[in-house]
Image (cartoon, rainbow, N blue to C red; front, side):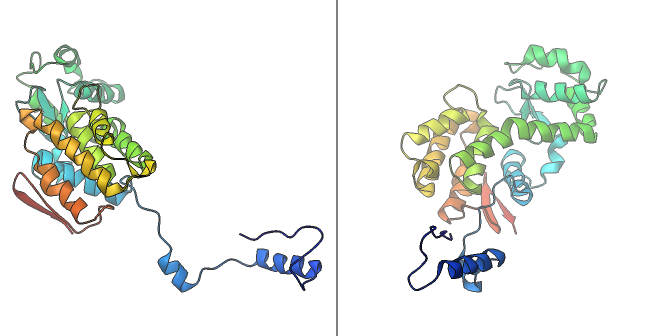
Length: 280
């Protein structure tokens, strides 16, 4: 920063007029860093909302949710996995029993009235909060797969994923001073647990972590905090039999953390449910 001289004096042995002339010359000349300075100056960390990082995030979640890196093939996915949430479907596991599937089909219908899923809206409202298929069987899975061929439905899935899960996770991660790995840990947690008021929700997993460590934004060490968050996440997963396999943390996120890969930079190698995956 250039300090402007006062009105009465310049540096010892230099006239005020000379100082002003020198300052004018400096102001007119671009300040260029030396090659050494440019090489050592830290670059701003790239967040998970960077397109390349977001693609990695989608592949990581798909490896855990669908045993595949081809996340775009999951628009048509639908089944009842027996976890008490009814049908689970789509790129992020929208569930008929938790309200997010209802919101998705409503958005799709707002954008494209008369679509193949629009007639299921009354049934989706009735089964919300339950594992019931009442009013959905036998044709809802077939019609979901038909809708998944429509780019408008694919875009609706993308938009609801971002609104409900991805954007809130990244926003909270950045607020906590976390880089891409931490933002992903938040995203994966909110995908599985939602962000409600129950003890295993994302917000309460985070609160549990904060009891033992501070995030960087509060002066804490990022690695220490992420270990605390993953510990809290594992605890939450073990509260529910359907989520009791914690390999998506133990042999994936924890591996990246141990390797010091806080920016989630490829190459990445991990395992989920014993299956190995690689992003080059």
